[in-house]
Image 1: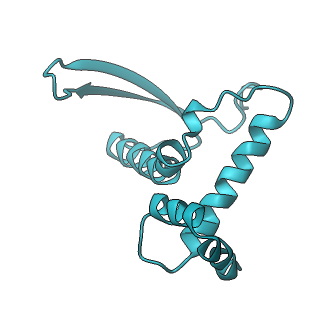
Image 2: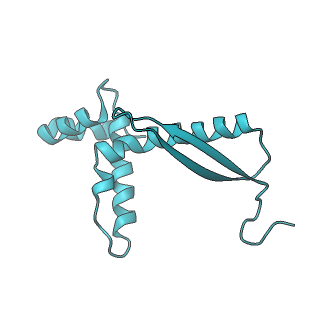
Length: 124
């Protein structure tokens, strides 16, 4: 029977990593992951790597373009509401067919009222 605090838990994975940034100072870290099925060590590493690839793809522009990490809104539902608005803006800009980064499209929409209205015509 599953422990009540972790329904579906089948295994715990331990990941040890060494990171050497440009300054040459190697840092070790240990992370643990909860698993809903038993995996080989190779599969755990692949799964965690895939998770972070997706996380980085989704959140990079939110962090860099929309400065989400700098947001200081704390009251009531405001943080969640603003997060939804940022993701909506990200999706609207990404849907526009112009082959430019989201940051470029956002700047262009700020500078040009015509482009601002045009980006909404590509929503589905």
